[in-house]
Image (cartoon, one colour):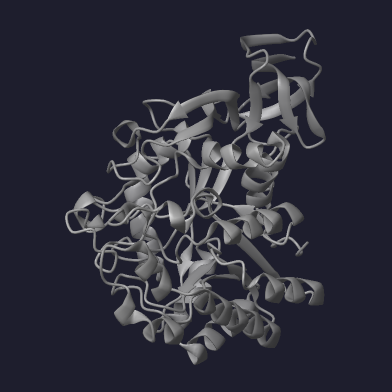
Length: 450
């Protein structure tokens, strides 16, 4: 057999561990994984020696914002940034595009906007808002990966939050067709009581306006709703460690819940954030160093299932750097290109292996999305591969990143690990987009909680 490509590395991260291997690719898929020195007939051969060979990452939390807010971000720029960061699959959030992905027509508009622009494979979440419960089954049939809802203000008027009764109704409808409900879990009632405290340039005031209690209360509501309805639920971007005991108890009971956190919660801490540095604003917020360490512990134990970017950029003016007012600034972190290096930097300091990072940014996220052919280097899987130098370091220059607007809190920060090349189905990503638009696999079922 003649392969299209054989890629050899002495540090190949395989499901069985890291070792020497020759990864053989035919027709965009991994046809064989052979010993490093195995003889193979091939059209093209790469030998990357001691550089690491990883499966492409799967980032299930990306806000592309196109159509409607393409000045904030778009498919071409977001997916190019993803590819440069070793991400080969993204699942796009249903906001902040206009129209949002809350109807089949909104999904069609998304697909039309994305067509021919994507440097990586792209799937789509649907949205659950107060007036679209009757649209959810049609969106499921159209191939969305699940349904996002907010329990607090989303920041954009076309995507309102659900109240308690609406959450119950949505959860029951989603459970009726074994869908997946993913939740921005902050309690609007708790936040309303803190609203007057967030104005100004001090990050401490903004942090106080979104306390741990807001997440804990909302997570409790989501878990209780899952218990009553049988809905599969997922907690988005967990920033507070306070809800972790509730999540542990729910998992121990067999409640079908999974949880993610994000690189910015694992890298930064509140005491590092200068006054007026609104590029650090996100909701829920970055918290204390002690809280960060509890998140790392939960990620290590499997209580937190995986890490995704929550890439949520905007135009520079919306970050209000001119005034430094956290209350007025858009809340979102631009980081899809930096997640692997950011997490590896923190993980290496804590004695983690590269295998452990890949597990939480590729295999588990692929399984969560039901993409069995992604997130691992194994025969039959898509040849989504990343050549990565774990020992290299680089200093982030926001202007050199590929996402649309040069704003990120990582600017000037030195990170460990550099992506040297990214291949999507065996072809190196570059100037010509060759990503595909994905539909939820019909058999996709969320993995059982660990």
